[in-house]
Amino acid sequence: MTTVPQTTISISDLRAELGGDVIAPQDAEYEDARAIFYAKYDRRPAALVRPANVEDVSKVVSLARESGIELAVRGGGHSTAGHSVSEGGIVLDLSPMSALELDLEARTAWVEAGATAGQVTDALGAHGLVIPFGDTGSVGIGGLTLGGGIGFLVRKHGLTIDQLLAAEIVTADGETVRSDAETNPDLFWAIRGGGGNFGVVTRFQFRLQAVDQITGGMLLLPATPDAIASFVEAADAAPEELSAIANVMPAPPMPFVPEEHHGELVIMAMLVYAGPSEDGDRALEPFRSIAAPIADLLRPMRYPEMFEPEEGDFRPLAVGRTLFLDEVDRGVAEDVLDHLRASTAQMPVVQLRVLGGALARVPGDATAFAHRTSRIMAAVAALYATPEEGPVHTRWADDGVARLRQTDAGAYVNFLGDEDEASVRAAYPGKTWDRLAELKRRYDPTNLFRLNQNIPPASAGS
Image 1 (cartoon, rainbow, N blue to C red):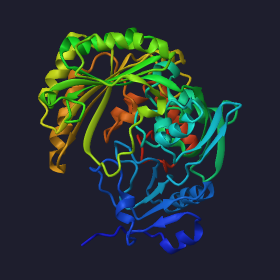
Image 2: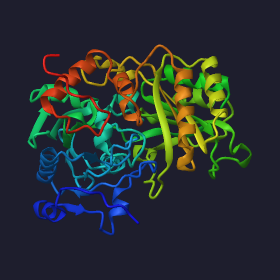
Image 3: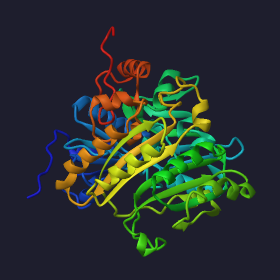
Image 4: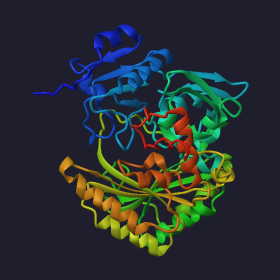
């Protein structure tokens, strides 16, 4: 028998009060509505609200504050920590709020927070424009932006937050405020990297970048210690127009992968050269020359083609950990390969991204993203088959981070899983944490927005 979450909230009153949809446990669509991308989180909220407008958002925030019920805010539902759904609380599902307002003359756009990166990228692509988001089309722009936003254009144009001009935010008191460099500038600093700790952002205003044709796609190389080290060296030496992601992993049985390579450790690289097309092949040649490619899908294309179609019903069981590295030499590459060989998961992965470029030119204290000088971002992740396997693969991921850790003790908040406060503090080291905690005390003193990588409010006088 299905257990129905208990709540003091009247579903009928909620429906009468709001213009959007309210989904209760008894409704036919409830099971699909409560599901998020990562299948390991099987939580049953008391209600899911799909707001029609910012007024609905304000009413839900006020209700959660007054009742004390847990509030989960969902954009695309990709939170690796499961923060997109609550057990027994309210889920505020922003997906209906996905409008895009373009100002082509000013080259800016207002985007509602329920839109996905793929939706916005496709719409902007018709004009040869982009907002540098991440690398997965179905991810919601809200969570991605609030955590920083590292993607295919990070070396050319920086983080997603580096394009942010303003935001409209429903704060813990239910009020809607604007935040930009002149209006509530402290809040503007905090939401550029500080996550969902300070309110529900309902709209973002972005600066648009001109990127139409790129040269890039997927390159599959054999994973040897020399190849991995050479790939990172080439990515570091490449012009800033080129950003690279190296996924070291067993080769999947995909049509373009020769059968004899299935299951072998490979470098599945995603590369984007966002510069003149006549220079693209020259910029990519160092990667092609590392080793004889197993598959070479690099070509001139429109930028939106880098985003794969929506995953549909794909809901993986997965664990992931994140860290920054100072270097990846042959010894580190050997450690990566040894650790992958030790995994019993369906698909273990170590991902490497060389940073720098435009990201590093922004002062470290200009935003709440505190890792401007970090050189390489890494992730250790595993997809597995059954929930019972979870603890084994979690230990494997944790061991991988411990094995690879160097002098950079930071972490990227958007890649943090369901971890402890020490991991969250690693995302916001030193004075960044102190400043965020003080702003949390001012804007959310009761920690209403706590279902996130949480920054508790500073105590009075601290």
